[in-house]
Image (cartoon, rainbow, N blue to C red; front, side, top):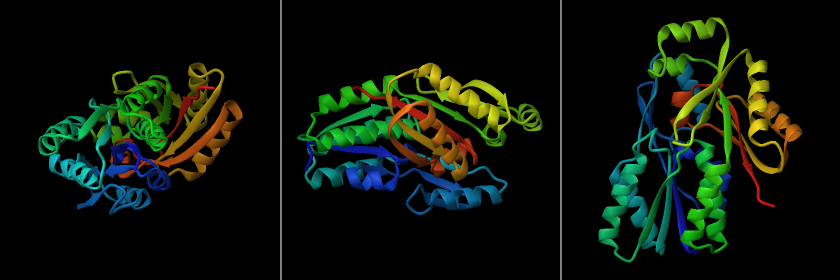
Length: 288
């Protein structure tokens, strides 16, 4: 077994093949849609979620894992032989999961004094969180120490760049992020907000553009400003937009020196707030 077992919550949106390949432990967020409660990516797939989301007038709701659920996940790993756990979670500005994981850590360390658990606030969400987890898990499999993993996570977090666009303002309005008047005007004018995550781990609007094509062009212009040269690891993130994801992938390969790429389905926990049609690109500059 590798020295460090890597954990995260399901807002990381890590593709299943990477979870299995790297033996990542994912703690699911709960999502309620169309009157039913599900475990993100466990009892409902992204595709099923978006179908239900489109057919119900009520905004889906999410709830973070409980201290008991996280504590039990840590306990199972320790009883299976893990002595160190690196637990990386959604930005504390977006969810209480980080604080809940800290509580679970204190509970487990009382029960298992020999265990060492490090909880990290990713200051990120979706695959901007997921890529930290994936790269840490790869390094853990190579036998890297906890200190080395923490340094790696910090380094990637500081240099990665995420730009995404929201297809409709409807879900931001339903979730109370903007007023009804703004959502109506935005819809009438076909406004596509271009968003990112700031250094404090908050989502913010960089710019707005009219129409999908102009918004896409502007998004890649912003990415090029942030990452003008060098090799990158890229991820295309989408919420029920497979055709657009292919277009964004080709554009990313055309504009950047892409050495590896992942196409990521935004899961129910993230899609609840972003809405169907959201699409983005994450770039991580690679050291050469």
